[in-house]
Image 1 (cartoon, helix red, strand yellow):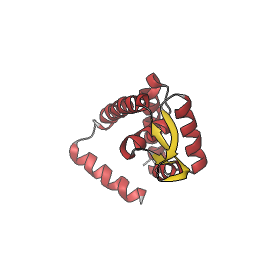
Image 2 (tube, rainbow, N blue to C red):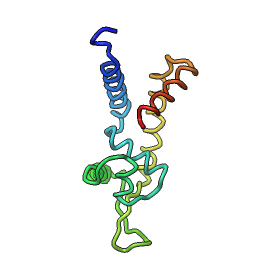
Image 3 (tube, rainbow, N blue to C red):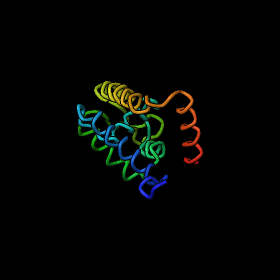
Image 4 (cartoon, rainbow, N blue to C red):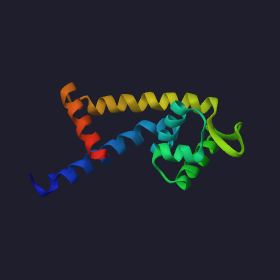
Length: 136
């Protein structure tokens, strides 16, 4: 294996290509990859406290605040009081956020299908197994 084909370099190349394709897929909605991930978490999990959102995104709360601020400025998310704790705030999708989130999810799934479509089912399964091992 040549130096420029080492496993870390190949992994970086694939990751860079995936991120580039994701950014392209999200352009019509003016949403970043991080914002699309937050939309997905909120679609699946419903309204969440900011620290819960950060935890599910595996980012620090300060970064989650920035993501939510951007989603709120775009009219895709809102902060609302937690009905179970007056001191806490929940982050929830607006109707537009839900619509954009669903559309973005479909676009990202289609892009992933095109990207990984060059692999057969057995290779996809093996790649998923290996990535789970590497992810810990």
